[in-house]
Length: 412
Image (tube, rainbow, N blue to C red; front, side):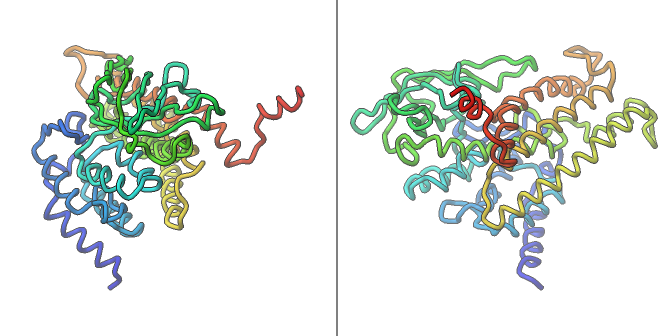
């Protein structure tokens, strides 16, 4: 018996013994585990499941055991994911620390920084938010102006961020700041971490058309941050920022793989598939009766399967030393388009029941679909707009010339 088969057998046995029954049911919004120092668990089994997975390092299965990770090989991590899917296990932890910050800390952080920040991420003890976009600095992120001035052994930070996901609930922030205004904009940016309870930090939630407020305005007024919290070299934050965005885009692309998503938290709708919802609302027990909708759903299912296989191929390529690259922009673009198509088809499938906002005439899952349809529109913006992704694909994947540079050369 191969070592991988032994690992699979042992993993299957451990999951059967340690994954609570309620953690083998579809995720619901109020039971998503974000962790953090103020974490609450509506379902007690969620806490048990997190603790058991974190103890093995399986919330971050391929991260080094030295920092609390699982230390699994890529092949072992794939087997673990397959076994989790086999029992329909819920994610033990949803965390921007896992999907975004942790990978760049492992790549750019010092040993001391890794030892300080990585284990709490694995255990879900710190909830992180991302301080990137600013008023006037969205797609042109490098034009950011939040200022960090070095004063002895600490920085004084002033400025603001916007669209900061869950800043009002986060414990710490990974933040881009300008440390030099005299150099080209990409060259004067640094990457720093600090506690959201530091004096001078404040947040204000932004209400969306979906009725939710996952995003915030975030303000920094003379925030004092230890200089040792700087990751990488001073003024080299843009390198880290780009790398983190690749990880973020890979994470966002997974929206196209799931049944649906709500505020980056995973599937919440009980309508498992578009086809299932369409049949249920039309009373069909066999073939879907509406030929046009049937064709649209069939094409969607084909595209979804092709996307899933492409994503798997990308994972396999990463086994050979290829980290996130411009491919993440391709996956982000298509995954988000798939997610938006999913909700458009769901609305078509449930007909007039998709028009509700509140009231007794609508089931909770119907109201949820409507709100998630509205929320899905933000997929086109978060993690870099779809237009930005197309530019990256054109330049970095297809090797097309930079049209702006060509225009400037033509004018000169």
